[in-house]
Image (tube, rainbow, N blue to C red; front, side, top):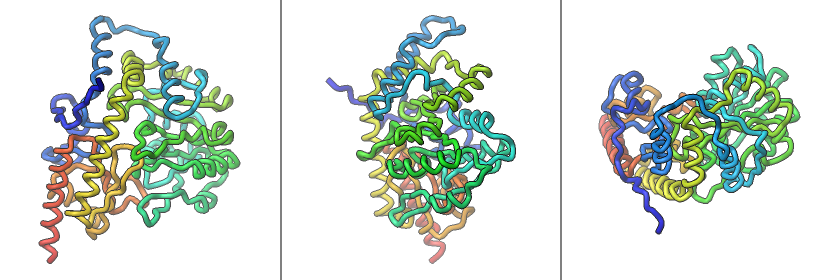
Length: 398
């Protein structure tokens, strides 16, 4: 009999040091907010992962360890079964986090003064990591279509890319808009980057969270050019809610890119996973498919609830239904508020903590990113508070 998982269960995270709650006072100056910002889930980490970790904790000695023999075969099998990508063992290495991996690539493959291309609105570390490493960020903004989704601007890419552009960072699926990029777009991007000697970092951390029958396409699989001009990053952390257990990896099919990157990683001893990363990953990928499917259906229900609620009660806010992930991109421009007023509405009037759109760069103005991976009762309460706050400001402007 199939086990039914309870995603309506409220999990009290107080006292655990979680960023979602603990950082609110520092960022917003108050703690009485419903936290719907940091991209982890408020669903309980599945029991089979917890039980695997507990089993290892029963042996109370946590010294140096080697990777379990079935670690990489389990990862390779998951990738093949879910994404049709036959990854070779030699292509894989552990990395201590995807954002850290971006920093590694920037330092290994570029020099200060070189240029890194990003496609805003996009996950803000794509901008912050290059800038913090004295690289110039070049912007290739996405084009927002009439239906609210985005497409890449290849005409602009051709204009902004020069010989100093060494890397393009791709969000696939896209954060914050939740787009599963189509094959034609990825082929076109790969051809451009291959012919311009630009290395693509494909951040695919949300790859296992495609929704509504959409399908994630790994960048490196779309063409030989893509395979030979890219480094792919992924992890089970978003899907199985284990972000605190660093469990990321890189996939590098090209021999010369892999040799340069893996040599640096090995020289700096970055390739060894922490004790608990393989244990959690193996448990997730061996036993997690039913949990994943139920979680995705629940996430879809939350998204539908947000879309329907806003249509009926807050029509000035238009949610973009994501094709992947548990993040909803809210178009709040219908409220006709500037950045400060929008922040005041969400934080001080509605008592909600969301990521504001401006942090994602050009095209994010007037948007907010909503994390809906919480029990539906929490999402309902948040939307009711937002509805009341919008009615409050509408009353003032009458």
